[in-house]
Length: 169
Image (tube, rainbow, N blue to C red; front, side, top):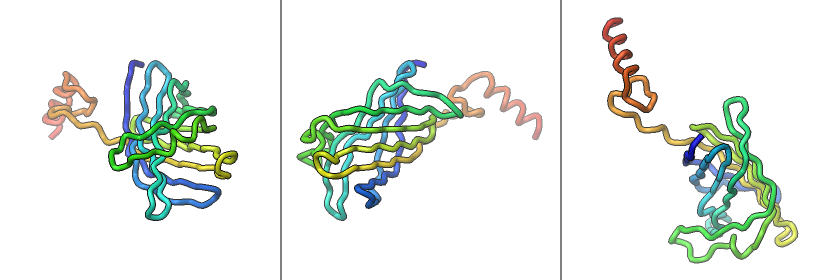
């Protein structure tokens, strides 16, 4: 398959050493390029009550995917650098200050839905394991006027479908 990208609107739950917090909604982008996947959670902000702690962008690239039971799974277990976010309301991002951190990520997705579990092992540095759970959906694609069968194209099958509707009514 050629290059394709899907952005999911996701709910975010963060658990730090067993204590769960609900977070803002986030956007997660998955890009597929010939069976390899990039997943990014941009501008991750950890909320501690009313206090935001801007972390940054968590991204994995070039991860092989496995297609099974109608969804794709990617798994990553390595160190990565959390890069600075680009949200202008925050001047400083904590992620780049941490250096390479151990991350375990498992994500499952279809064209319309995604979920991911990300564990960031900060035991050596901060005595914490940060577990991030993401689940959400991709917005429905815009339909073209005249795309009766909703296949994303206006073609002969749309005309045939209209004729079928007229003849059966």
